[in-house]
Length: 364
Ligand code: AN7
Image (cartoon, rainbow, N blue to C red; front, side, top):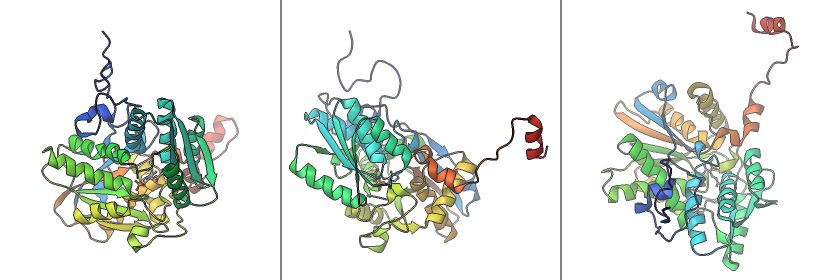
């Protein structure tokens, strides 16, 4: 007899996706239709180069969220948001996005048989992300404005029409994204001492904190990490303490001037004994290249912000000689934004199709 209970794992033994894996800690029932692409269970990769090269006594890990089904951490939130919307019979989802949210919303809505509408800042999202929104069939609209303008319009529309907002203002998005903190604890066998994240709309750092708090509450961990957020210097409202009207950064994913989860994220960082700071685009690109060239991990520029932040902290003497476990979340895959990689590096040499030409070029 086929098993029809929605909360049972599907018949294969694979990872069942974050909702089934953590159903006891999420607001789902066996009535919830689970819309999943088997997101989560992402690797916690030990650093071979960057960690050992830093002063102090740092055990460094990368939580590589780029290997989720649509290539970013947004899938964790979206499986929850779309499943719960489907449970209530909603037919249309909508979001504002710097790219990754729209990719995930488009994919999970397609999977659920729902329509999806995405608003993106014109010309300011990475090409891979645009391709995802389009190929998954989302009604994709470019706005002559920035992310904050897009989100304002989306809030107004979803307040007035029966359309589900699937930005991280939606509490179900936060529920899903918490599971990344659960996984980190399960993978390490304990919580990290310090968790560093890039901050844009400020949902993810908030969700991790809530995840750690819940894991402690249910007794699966007995202490909490310090939460440290890094913003891009041209889009650092939390650092300045006021909205940035014209945010600008190469890390387009976090080109956000007025984060929706502002207060929650500040509480997460303050309550945990962490901090918020910023790094320049140069520091972001340096970390981006270092991760790819020395660790073999290709994450998108916004993701490298966490590592750039770690390098900045280390250079400023933040770490003493006590052993610490540090996790940097790498939020999205580098293939999302191939243009940034190709444009910052030397173009490949071209040779005629003769072996001697290669021998000469390589100086063999
Ligand atoms: C790769 O897709 O806001 O602080 O609209 O794509 O939770 O916003 C993306 C954000 C970090 C920041 N890294 O997370 C969107 C969007 C990557 C991202 C962030 C984003 P939040």
